[in-house]
Image (cartoon, rainbow, N blue to C red; front, side, top):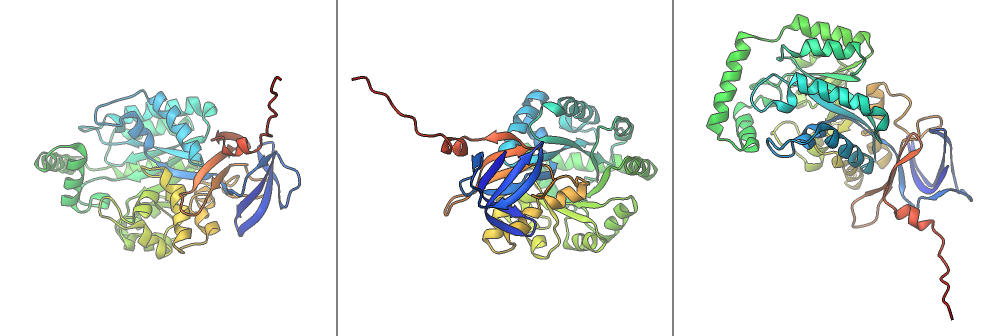
Length: 397
């Protein structure tokens, strides 16, 4: 199949009036000025399919409102279609193994295991390449046993070390954390403050076992699983996670931690929604500030997948990065961080994971078609309709 009349976003720049040949799921040829083609791209940009290393959406789709639950399979299948329509062709579903507590229905180790098994059982039926990002809450003493089981079954593709203990990391400002979560849950700040103090008391009596955490990380490394940190806030925290074998720093919450992660050669990931809005919704490091400092390698969907594509074009529009460099934040950089060297760029012999994006002055970019390994997984009809020849209408005399 040949796609033509495109602006190809290649690693080194933009190729106007380009074409791209897809054969057996891979890119067979790239060039300019094709006379014959199968699909007229009508001047759309052709981007490598977006790669999302951290998306929390499955939890939100299962419970769109507090205590309003929907079947996990229903949520997964609908999320899959939405991701394809956003040009995301590889997605790591971030599944939480959180400490058992109130409101933890979706983030318990049992629920996490069931969701991971479901995703793996449906993997071949999904439109996008859905992978598993296991979020190991290090304060959860029930998680390691299940994580060992899932690692042995090769059901995990990436593991991150999370510590959401109030007073450090993402929640280092205790009062801001209390205000934010109380408002989100619709309860009083005093009621949530009691929960926080009770949790801190429990953790003081039963702290994380670092021997167990080291064991999980060692097993992950032996299986070639990428290890990520989460919410690094100090140089000491970056030093700790590096000693555990982490190669990816997710959502550093201070400029100090982001600089240290960069200095040590870790990939640094931040949320596209944070960057798009220009601020963290919990008052931590602005992804946009970190981007301007050259400290961000990867943008992830976090809680809002549409932000990935739109942030790429926003960075270009405001002059922060040329388009081909901005695209790397959501394609080749996450591919390299995850060890997915078969995708992430429009190059010969790479997977034909492609998003066709229409842009026009005064309008937001729109994905018109997406391909995963050469197969169309989203097609909104605009490009297809343009190829239909006018039909003659016969009128009876």
